[in-house]
Length: 114
Length: 112
Image (tube, rainbow over all chains, first blue to last red; front, side, top):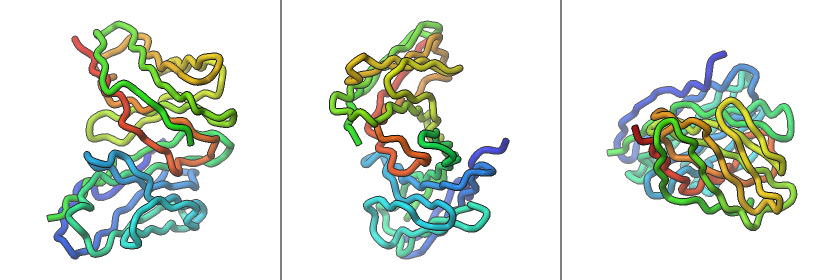
């Protein structure tokens, strides 16, 4: 069974640009969550999508957005990039089949803003 | 979700058991204890979770004290590949990865 796939693995962007990251969850998983990891702040929750709807959102500015498609694939977009957006962006998928389930994380996309 | 306290770092000799403690003294009755680990530059990996009984799987064992205020993750025979940051997370049951609160974790270094 294929794991969570994130593309691209590495990305370099310039301040002010926008970027779109992609996440393909494990087949059959309907929940996709996004996290940002930086050396200073650690792992922080961005948002979660379930059945194409944003179900939860972390404490990030509106420049961070996302969506989920009918096949559960998800994208996140960051507009007007700032240097501080340089981070490892991780997505996690879950089966959501019961009250307690483990999350499976992808390898992440390392974004560098210059 | 309850807050957790973990040592910043620990060393363990290869082949020995690694015992990673976690304090969660404010845990609520409906909160589970989850453990994840993150090997350098990779995504976190789920290890194990439990409510109040001790749990064991192919990766590790989880020992939860009777008052549930602390727990210990045990890697029975640590290998160099177990070198990673280990996160103890306490939260209510949820069928998703949303809003997992990762603290600073414990950097476990397995020494040859």
